[in-house]
Length: 311
Image (cartoon, rainbow, N blue to C red):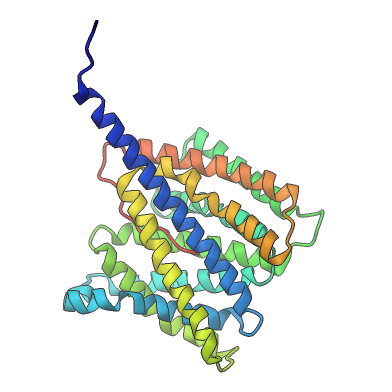
């Protein structure tokens, strides 16, 4: 009878457990974002999305105050303050558009269209960073774009303001992701987040002042919850990426489409359309393949610690 060396089994079990934990963090990140969307929709009955974005950014920054106090001047040590400002402007415009879109269209449709963000990042990297995109990745990009068209259905229905706002979100999120990728060469992750929120605060405030309504005290609970959920979603996503490769986690990050559809149905009585489901699946397949290819190309390089965008 042959014996089995336990040392050949334990690493496999440990790796399997680590992968499960990583998946759990990724799913929790998606749940946090979906709950955040629900709160935005509820607050939108009394406040414009611009004001909601401002308070969400404000309370998101509050979450980082303990770290800033502990880190001291190190928290703001940077060689690229101007690029942090540019990135914050792009991210601010993206989130302002995203929160506004959430108030104008079904959650499932918004979530499905927002999934094309990785496709936009790939195209932006090709244009601005000179990355080479070969045939198989072009096919994946085309397949994902076709999925977006299935969701939007141009020619069969009017392309609404909400759809345009999601596309603006995707575009500016891609810009900020490319800038973030460059910043990681000299900047720490926590410092990048702090500068992002600090610079976004006046940007979102200027937008909020155009539609300002004096908040009711009870609504500050909702505003604070948005900031906390934003911070929590980012923390969970980063925790998952520290334990597993992005290509293996991408399908689980896409569960936000499921949560968006479920919350939209049970809370707002929004029945997801079959075209949303089909288009969403097409986008997921395309972006999952691109994530897998990107991970394969970087396998021999230092892991990318870029901070993904939170919408």
